[in-house]
Amino acid sequence: MHAPGRARRPAPGHGAQTRTVATVTPRLKLRWREGNAIRLLHNGEQYFPALIAAIDAAQHSVHLETYIFNLDDTGHRVIDAMRRAVVRGVKVRVVLDGFGCNDTAYDVCDLLADSGVRHRVYRPEPRGLRQAHFDLRRLRRMHRKTCVVDGRVGFVGGINILDDYKDVPNDGKGPRPRFDFAVEIRGPIVDDIVHSQRALWLRMSWRRSDDEEGFYKRFQKWGERLLARRQARHQPAADGMRAAVVLRDNLRFRQRIEDVYLAALGRARHDVLIANAYFFPGRRLRKALRLAAGRGVKVRLLLQGRSEYAMQYRACRYMYNDLLAEGLEIHEYMASYLHAKVAVIDDCAMVGSSNLDPFSLLLAREANVFIDDAGFAAQLKQALEDEMRGNARIVTLEYLKKRNLFQRVLDGCSYLMLRAGVALTGKSAQY
Image 1 (cartoon, one colour):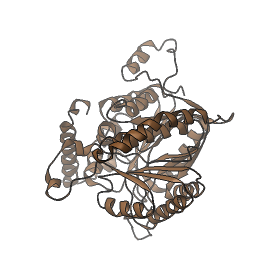
Image 2 (image 1 turned 180 degrees about the vertical axis):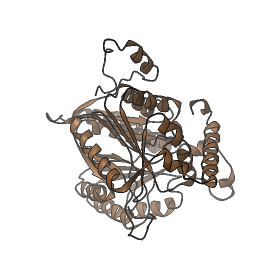
Image 3 (image 1 turned 90 degrees about the horizontal axis):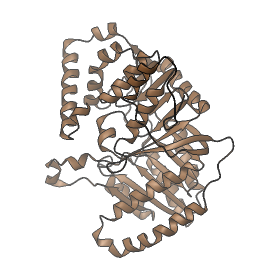
Image 4 (image 1 turned 45 degrees about the vertical axis):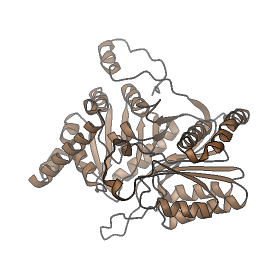
């Protein structure tokens, strides 16, 4: 597959088709990094041991960003690892999201403070009567899940600091873990994750009027840190992977993640497999998926079969008839909650925190990694297909006809409510 950002000429005799695709295929200039070692981590069972081992090996710094930080056994193990790092003299920083950690933020911050960990809360939720006041800015969340240790080892994915088995369904066969992915990265691309983390940390410090002297000291050291980072740049491995960090924010990169998906889908020639927890794509993504299927590309979606949040789940189901009519395959994951936000498009793969819904694509800070490597793409595809064979059901028109009238009405109402929510953002034309 030709990854986004590479020049590509239309094939002879396909000019009309190429022009049609170009209407939804943005021209991107991604910051590609060569020579990265990237390891796929499946579920918290693989992610948390790798994360804690990296923190335990830290010598200088640990910087963690997470949407949810739950104080279950997993959360306490991560805090304990950070405490051990601080005792060794490691500088540890944590950024929590105020909405995602609304129920736990105060307790987590107390434990972090007691452990000597510096921490900040992104857009803390109001307390008391102020919670009843609606403000659109409260929807702008920090949904990223990243960690960098010593500027050398990075983690990016969709996994929160939350036990795999916390509040998952049990159908009598015992609970099954949330289905999710992350990647462990070593190589030049880690610098870009470090830069995004430091930029957010500094940006959040601007809001602290009680720390102006500290802010100016940190600003003075900013240039020194940048210089040190350039001098300590990673040496790319000869057999490493080509990859790019893809961010979404409300300033410079408002549509970057969506544009990368559009560019990749516009160039897809063989296979598209998307696993996404909350799937409510806008018009451009829907068109790109339809055009890919129309070119003969095999387009498959792995979506939630068990409802974790009812409105998003039912709004997605309302679109099933149209998606099937457009030539897409739909599979529902039934073993547990599907929380993954990954995709395989020919020989490229996407792993990260961004859902394909208005929350992620229009409002939240997100972080994905786009990997241009056939071997990695094949590994992720195999992991998805294994789950699809053993733990998913295929959705057909016959299956949809079996839904009763009440379920159809609920699906339709959820769809309209979610559309109304998008209208509040001023982006209703995109959906």
